Image (cartoon, rainbow, N blue to C red; front, side):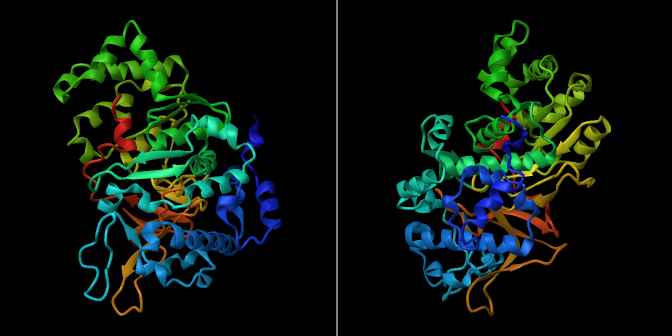
Length: 452
């Protein structure tokens, strides 16, 4: 592998020029093209039309084959020929796991949640012809067998959501959809400053989608990856720290866990120092979360860091996700010479936006959009005095609700998905993405990173 593995633009431009670039089926694209920097550099109007064509193709399939859409009268009357630009997302109805009080009328359904329906049957979000969908993706990726090996032969992968707003739901994705998103994540991380050959220590489990895709992105970028599984397997065998790590893992209560947490933090610092780790991938929750979560406080990144900053002399970069990065966190780390970045992603859609290394912005939570294969709209829902429900996109500088769309449709299909976050729209992306009502993140990738 070498530095050119992420396409600088030539491969994507060759692909686009060899077909009608405004009518592309995204399932027929090589996965590696999601890693191309050309997505971020091309003319915006041209890109919007390219993505609009992909949206139209995914809509056409979804309205016919995905039960959530095919069985809904709101989606039945959509004129696909009107979808020519990704900004036409605002003309489509939103979907939401949970119903939104105050929407709807005797004549209109409003925003009605699908959580219970998906809990009962996750396949309502999945194309009925999922095997044909996978075959379509495989035809565009001649190396699909080698890719499949990286996913242990599983053609469909299942991931649970965090359940922060209610009972967890299952997202099912084809392995090539997960791989496409991983290339997009690698592109985002390269913007953040990740480089070939650097050593990275990841505190997300690979059982969660975020942890799995961070590992795949590290492989794509040819980085030395230290998984959470590897870190704690080695520490559990260590003569000094092994018993504390095992007892912490087996503790049944916060009171029992508290006896060992200081030793576990010391063990983590020992591993980072002795292995010369250059990048940390972890979580730093805000204070309001820490106050109510003893386990989260025990292994939050800054709790580990501030007890002995000298142990982090090899660390050049802290990549913190799961929450907006607290201002006091990135200021302390920057003062100590450590770069800080984040990337927004979710179980349903990866990766929406990222913090580029060269931006120089003071706020790490000011993100540039990474527009394929996930796109987002900051908008307010409107149905009163409208011929049909629409999303009214906010002007630059204003806050709204974040709606995300995965353009591939290779499994659970989310179009105009009201994910629960709010954000401020900027000229290049988003800032202040935050789930203000998030109280509990049990079961999520972020919560998982705070335990062992």
